[in-house]
Structures are given as C-alpha cells and as structure tokens.
Image (cartoon, rainbow, N blue to C red; front, side, top):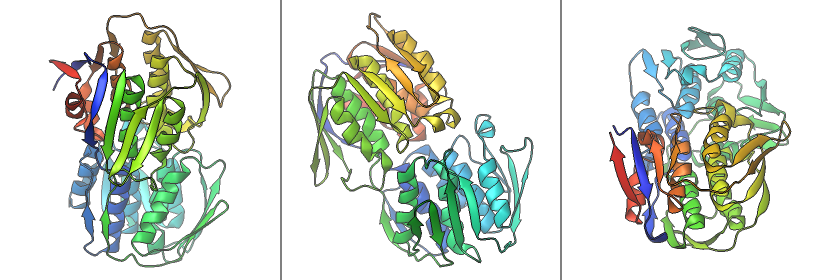
Length: 409
C-alpha cells in the first residue's frame, strides 16, 4: 500500500465523462431494509465503497463477533438491526470507531426493549447485543443535533416494533435530508410514516420486497465540482446523478454555483462548466456536513472567505474533521477559526509553496477534498488508500482527466 502519492495537472484543462460511485448512504439503508423485509429484494448499482461491501458481508455473517471496522453507518445500523432481530452479537470496530459515541442510540434501543451492554467504556463500542423483549414503550425522545444515523437506525426498525414508534426529535435537526432519505426508502419498500413538526410516527407494518436502483453519489460529485472551480478550463460530465435526489449533498450544485461552477442537468447526469465565483460567502452545513471539507479546501485555493455554521457533527466523524482542517489549511497560509461557538470562518492566504502536502487522518474525505488543489500546485496526499471507504476508483478517475500521479512506497 502506498504511503503517499503526488498529484499534478500539467495543462489545468479538464474534459471528460465520469461514472461516479453509487451512493453508500442509499445503498446501506436499502440493504438494511431489504434484510428486515425477510424477502428477496433486487438491489441494483450497489456501491463499491468499502462501507457498503462490508455491510453486505456482515449481514450474511454467522459470526458471534462482528467488526464494523471504521464504518459509522454500519456500526449504528447493525446495532439496531441485531437488536430488533434478537441476534446475539458482539459488535466492535477500529480504535477510532470505539471512540465514537453511541450512547444516544443504545439508550433508545434499551427503552424499546433491547438488551445491550457495553463491553468496555460506557457509551462507546464494543457492544454486546443479546436479545429483544418488547417494552410496550412506543414514544421516544432523541437528541437530533448529534448524528442523523441514530435516528435513521431507529426508524428502519420502527415498523417491526410491537407498538410501532413515535420519535420526538429534540433540538435543531441536523442532516434532515438523511432522515428524509430513510423515510423515502422505507416508503419504497412498503412502509408509511408521518413526519409532522419534530415528531415522526411509524405504525407497526411489514416491509415488502421491491426492486431498487441506487443513485450515483452526490458526495463524490463534490470533488469534481471543486476541480472544475480550480481548473483553467473545464467541461465535465458526471453520470448517474438526478436533480430530484434523496441525497442531502445534492446541495453541492447550489453551493458551487457561488464558488464558480454552473450545473446543467441532463437526462443521464450533470454537466459542469466554469463561471465567476463570489469573494465572501456564508454557508450552513446542517443538512450536508460531508461537503464542508471540500468547500474549505476549495475556498483556501481560490481565495474565498467563507463563514460556516452547522459543523457540530464533524467532531465525531472518522477524525475530528474541524481540527484536521484547521491544521491542514495552515500549509496554504489560510486559517480556519472559531468566531463564535456556532460560526467558523475560513480566511484564505496566498499560496507560495512549490509542493503542498496533506495528511489524511484515516479520513477518506480529507484525501479527496485536498486532491483537487493539484490544479494549482503539485500536491502530496499521505495514506491515499483511505479513499476505498467511499470512492475506491478516485485516483484512477483523476488520471482519466489528465492528472499525473506518482506513488511513493
């Protein structure tokens, strides 16, 4: 496995057509729902991302100890899945995964009747899951400002609960589109829900087998938007994206319009073209936190000051993404500062290095967000294999549009 790679783009001109990976957010929800239906559903275009391949394997595994590796959705979705299906499992993950909180979900599942114990530290994996006895409880209050994955995990098992579920979301709802994606997929597989105000109600029902084709990944598209904004000239076609998408990261089309990219929606995807960008913008990432790293790296590169809110969940991702960004933009003479507890500001500086080098912190999005800067200066990306988590073909796709890559062992 390469310790680093160096990227450059001699011409700065981007043209080509790219087939993006499938959405792992959609794929992972579809896999859990299909498994809960107990019937054979036909799922097409499942993501080649490691997280999705891992979930497919684990759903078929008879092992008592299940390793979710570094996959947050896999850990959270399987916790709920094993609980409701009464399976006895020990669920663990990487060192970093065992530092990511899961108490909100575990407490909610315990209230509903699940038997779950912490193997080591209270509030964190590994978990010992050993059965489910309905508690008769159907009304739950859950904090909604930490991770929408907890809420999605509870919603997907809700129709199988003896009393169904009334889920009251407390506080500001983060990543709302991901909750709505879950409900849309549940509906596709025959389950209806009511989302009124801050309460989601799901009555006891049965999932039905269905055919489903997973859409291309809007999160993956964000790196191509960044490349178009940084290129001298660009005309890029991204295949498999839909204008009317379940995915919250569809917001990248609107965000990048302000940062220099025009989106033309076509029958088979989107065409990206360059335009003028603004100089100072404010953005709320509450509904699309996975886009923050792309935007920070891009704005540091093109000299845009950006005020950002809605970054709370970035602290508990694959790494502390806020801290990682604060460190890495320093090499670009930029700064990312906390202006208030809710607002972070990126102040861009002037690039003057011959080669930029970025650490990835075992985080796929750090690698992919900083790589497009190779359109300005040669860029070294350390531990480049992290992209396998969501976009295994990323480096090969970059070579298709003229990036030159040198690997170092």
